[in-house]
View (cartoon, protein in one colour):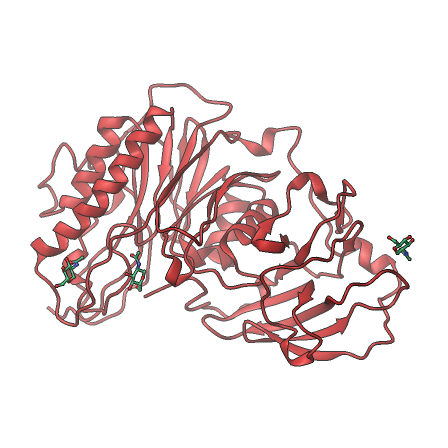
Length: 460
Ligand SMILES: *[C@@H]1O[C@H](CO)[C@@H](O)[C@H](O)[C@H]1NC(C)=O
Ligand SMILES: *[C@@H]1O[C@H](CO)[C@@H](O)[C@H](O)[C@H]1NC(C)=O
Ligand SMILES: *[C@@H]1O[C@H](CO)[C@@H](O)[C@H](O)[C@H]1NC(C)=O
């Protein structure tokens, strides 16, 4: 048997039927976990040593599960790579993998631990869910003998309750299932960028209410920082997003949250300590049925009805995360300026580094210096405050993720801005905001290449 290729990255969902009827709201928990990672090695450790390390991580997750249950949680999402980390070669990952059977087998590992061979991690996760009457979302690698052929990454779940209805999308990679708190779907990290199956299939076709989202996401400023980006995803897709990130400050991994279509319910972003963090909140079970559900936005309407922005300043190029933007310094109207420089930037093209995906985006960005070469660089704090703003563009598509990041990487609270139906991201309260970046991040799914490949925040 050739063991050189293993499919990786599988979301395992341990499910347990709750003895409750349909819920209007539910209590959701996400846990940002500081993963205990093994020492780097080329030669695989023994299965026992691997299990020892995984059990150390599950001990921590177990505490978080119990704490969440005590506070009434119905579901807890734990991070991608949360059980063994990410420092592996294709060979050294081997002792950490288990064969995860097809969910159709209707198996409760806690009750029948040996039915599919030696699967101690699935057994422990299953018992954790069963004994605590909670849905546990965890992420472990699946291993399949595959005769040298690379098997695509895919997701599976273990079914613990026969009465739960499962839908199998035509493409077996993505899963949706019904719970007492609406329909849920699962993505891991980079899936959120994709048309098929993630965004369009799961969100639009299957009309899911909540996405369970284990991630190992490293923040890439200014546009791909976990909390602003994922909260924008929840808004753009109109779903609850339960995002659990791994925590490792030296790898820039932090940023978990519970996001709804209307607002950020709770988030955690900590670049100071190495502690884990449990977050809880009560989102609506079926946000689409709420009167407050945001109306569809026409991301083309406003900007196409006004005269194009013209400036006496000349355009200049600047790089943001390997994409060449066109910038214009913001300096036209009379007003009080500080020494700080802001620029408007735009990009329309195929992003090609660490994954290929088509972007159309527009942003207003604070720039550290007046040196043109540095305009694309990320900056930490700004002192200029915007009392009134409106950003719009003539986007040709539906998926535009609006973000506002304030000085100190803080999120702008929803009460300070709105997204109007005609496609404007604009100020609302008049409270002056120290804006670092304000962006409309558009994904043109129809122009993507067939395979997006490896994406931001994805380690393997
Ligand atoms: C890594 O190696 C050091 C030194 O041999 C040891 O003390 C430590 O426990 C090891 N860590 C893990 C996670 O195995
Ligand atoms: C964070 O990740 C790095 C690189 O993978 C590792 O060396 C370090 O020990 C991790 N930090 C903690 C606190 O686990
Ligand atoms: C500039 O600031 C001064 C003092 O705060 C204020 O009186 C003046 O109206 C401002 N001018 C403009 C154009 O905003």
